[in-house]
Amino acid sequence: MTAPAPLLYSRGFLLTNVEESLLDSLEHYTKKQVGTKILYHDEVTPVDIHASHEGWLALVGTVLETTLQPGNHRAEPVASRLWHSFRDGGLDALEDELYDLGGRYAVLISSRSGTWVYHDAAGTRAVYYDVVSGLVGSHFDMLARLCAGRPSRPHRIDTLRLDLRNRFTAHSDILALLPNHRLDLQRTIQERFFLIHANQAKSEDFETKLSAVMGSWESQLAHALYQSDEVGFSMTGGQDSRLLLALAGKFTNSLTSFTYTYAGADSGAPPQSKWDESMKLDFDIVKRLQPFLPSRHTFITKPEKGQGAWRAAHIATLRRNSEGVHGQWLLSDYMALFSSRSSLHYRGNLVGLGRLISAQPQSLGDPYGRLRTLVKNRASKKSDPASIALKIHDSSEVHKQYESVHPDYELTDVWYWENRLARWYAQLLNETDVAFETFTPFNTRRIIDAFLSMHPADRKEGVMQWELIYRGNPYLTFFAANALDDLYRDHVSSGRARSV
Image (cartoon, rainbow, N blue to C red):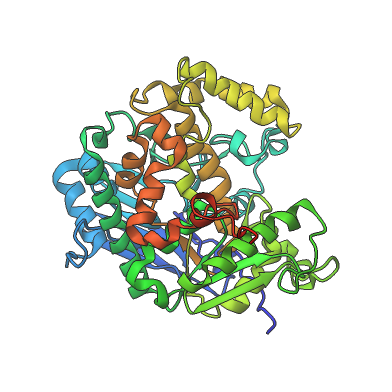
């Protein structure tokens, strides 16, 4: 089956003061009047609006309710609930509501006192804004085209990898909203609202944390299956996808799963590259796990060189949809596998935030010094200009970004959360939006707090992840992650009998 052409700015949105011919020309976009502003959005993107004489609130994107007890769902529309919290308690009350709100979305809210923008916990719904016109939108290219007539101060930030750019972009007037920050649109500034207080999960015991994660995860997955025509996930040999499978629980056979690999894996052809070797390991592990997978499981093979005709034909659109290039070769297979634009991708990449990924448990002193070293090393390892990366990191705007972070939060975690995930992973999702919407139940501040509150050594060893896998499906702990080891071979028998 040939995949259809990718849509420009798929699943995106724009908040503007005036009609924009660029967005009016996109047949898959629609527009709504919200107060004095116009909200453009892809017709497939869910939009929930509450409006009154006092102001309005719009939720743009996929919102997944979380409840500690599955089935205990609220009757009031989410946008209305958030508005009433804001009306009665201001921004603090609204931000309390966001602590448990899952999904991939932007929150736009306006009253007589101002207009503000938020996004989901990890910023997986990319949000950009133009400091001159006040435009707010989902795609850098969209905003750059809308202010194309305005000169941009020349700089070399586009030579940096995305996670080293912090909030800055290739256009000097366009900035990215970082997670845990609110955008004050009237002043066109972003201010930190989260991580400034103690981690409330620090005082909870391990059982309470596990219960909170499992209850929230199941509730979100149930909501996702209710909202979507089809929910699929990628199964690899790693821990993150094992966690997705384990916590799918009773929903497993309502899902579709897939594994991407190299051409020839199924026939036993030897790997021809390091990438092939990695994919062969995934293939072999997934084959062992197949009895636990959804009945609908597919292996996707990477096309041979010269066979990426679909990608070549649509490269201009793909480049406009994302600031970076990630896995474009997969997109046509994704679109063929998930024919409905209402499909959802259940993904686990965010779980890496729980693993103390950029630090060592025994070396947590000098947080600011270690953070600066991390930025310097990230630049130098890929020949990015370290001088530019450090100039950004040492700027007053970025320094202020970290100075209010509570000591309960490790600064390299904050960097990974607010730069690696929001500036790189969010662009990967902008790319895959042509095929499906993406969510991970890990993407709530309550769940993230639970993981980050663990002892550093337990975080590094993935204790929470393995315990969740065990409780979700203990049989999935029999096989190692990213290795062909299993408990029987390691502890019972090598499979070799004694000679007689």
